[in-house]
Image (cartoon, rainbow, N blue to C red; front, side, top):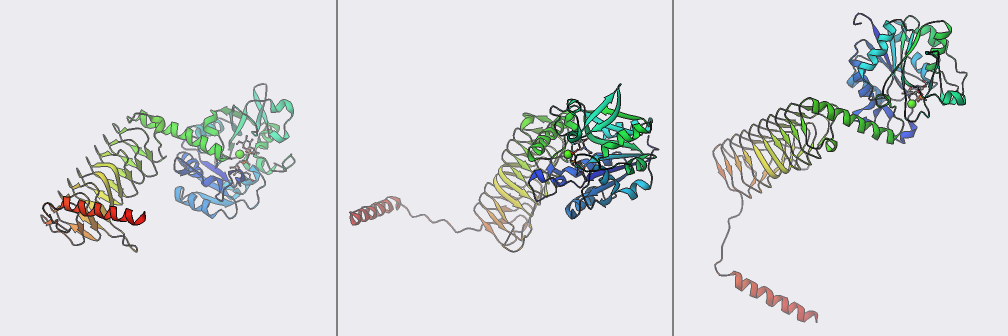
Length: 454
Ligand code: UD1
Ligand code: CA
């Protein structure tokens, strides 16, 4: 089928008012990725041309389309007058011709390219119109597939359906493939004489039948074609996508002790023999290399974890955290925009931001990189084999040379040369036998104060 030319139209001009949001519906995210980006990813795997129909003033949607599918053509449907009307907003793309024209909705994020290929296959095998059907647990609101003698004859929208038609359980998922030779002629004959006074794409079925063109329906699972109109449906789709992603990574050789508590992003990449403990969240843009362990209650985003590294429990990796092989990032350690080289360790209570930590260095408990002076961010460079004593502050911009040693509790404001020992704290003084007299003085003061109050 690769010689056949295809055009996919993604309809995304819907208002989505039931989301009660300032944001266009298709920009809401599941798995850390906007709905429309999921659809465009599935469509992109098919090859062929892509066109997206957006509503007027949908600049943000256009920007997202350009980001994820730069080659897609964009058309604006000036008025929302139904799904067939939306398809015809892309008339120039259709008129350029294609063997098959696939119509998908931008609010159906779990659709797979395999299912879309099946519909294109039906057109390649002679159907003028191929429709995707499914049997929802609750068919309310969906168009019903009217089948006579085993043949699809029409799709009836719920508002136009008779009681008998409403009792039908096979529904329209909303994905349709049309033979490119017939598409425009069929679309142009669709009118708006129906309950909603809209141009229904679904009318293409009855029109094709009237011309004795072949029409077929293929079925799929409800989970794949759930359209999103409400926040509750958005949450259901998220849950479904999470199940799919967990299964994908388990199959790929990742250990998850409690998969149901691990939250992944659509773009998370995990190598074989990665171990993920319970309650870990992967925001967008995380890559974890072979054998690394992500311990419980860690949050990662925009980070790369090297081979055999250990992160957490209770660690936070923020965008630009780049951990080399065998690095250790322990509890209550935050790393942002920093390279931590092979074997380096920050095991307890630390902040590492806008820094490099050289190979094998040890960052003591409570170390803070002071990267921000209230105006700008500055870099901290820690060389190879450095020891930073506990409770030190490194005031950026500053560098600590290879093999240097920073004494605990230091506030480092000047560069430390390689192999240097930096002690930047006030010297301790001891007053022998003075603890008891101090106590006596203090309790005398307390008695006095009480008498005064009486
Ligand atoms: C549509 C189908 C219905 C099917 C259901 C599946 C039609 C007439 N009905 O109904 O058979 O069971 O989807 O979810 O096709 N859109 C535009 N411009 C418009 C109208 C819609 O771009 O003028 C886009 C929307 O953004 C949305 C999609 O088309 O992505 C579907 O529109 P919607 O109004 O949600 O259709 P349904 O009534 O759900
Ligand atoms: Ca819908």
